[in-house]
Amino acid sequence: MEYSGGVRTDLTPLTALTVSAGVREDTFRFLPLRNADTRIATAALKLDAAAVVTGVVTAGFNDFKAVDPRVRPFRGLVGSVALAYPLLEVGRLDLVATRRLEYSFDAAEAYYLENAISLAYNHRLVGPFDAQVRGGRASFDYGNREGSPPHTDTLDTVETGVGYNLRNRTRVSFNYEYARRRSPALADRNYNRRRVFLAWTFAI
Image (cartoon, rainbow, N blue to C red):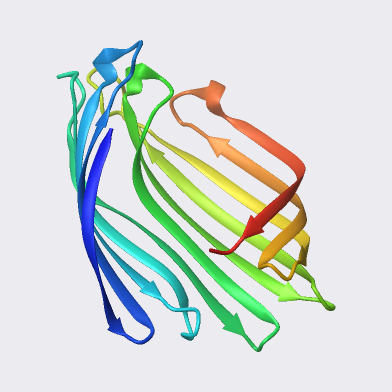
């Protein structure tokens, strides 16, 4: 259950600021000891599509407290960045970064703090066709529950693909991805993954 509210104002013809606050109650039907309450205040700056750099930058303060007294409360900064910058009318750089709190699938670890960043370059080929290459790294900080050893897992990804852009601002692409995860504490979480997949993306 979640309740939130906020206000929005245009700072300039190309930028808008939204400030909001909310309360969320997370309920686990079969594991009530994982229930938690979160209070968050957020400010989001949106850059219009007509600006040189476009996208959204969000910064927030997260106050998380679980029902389980053995789970360490979290009070700190979270946020995200999603920015695009055009290059010479034939290319585009995309930067995406996030810092957020997520529940772990393992109840013994309660939650982890994720810090992730990725950079992609998209280059127009012929007509509606383009090519893209992307690289990223994410880290996951565990050890926020009593008895759970602290450790930081990492995930590195590299992706490339070709795409076809439709007139309705959607893109269909054929992609290859290589991912490598490493955990210094839990060897069974280590993996190397290669996959080929189709993707459909759209702009809002």
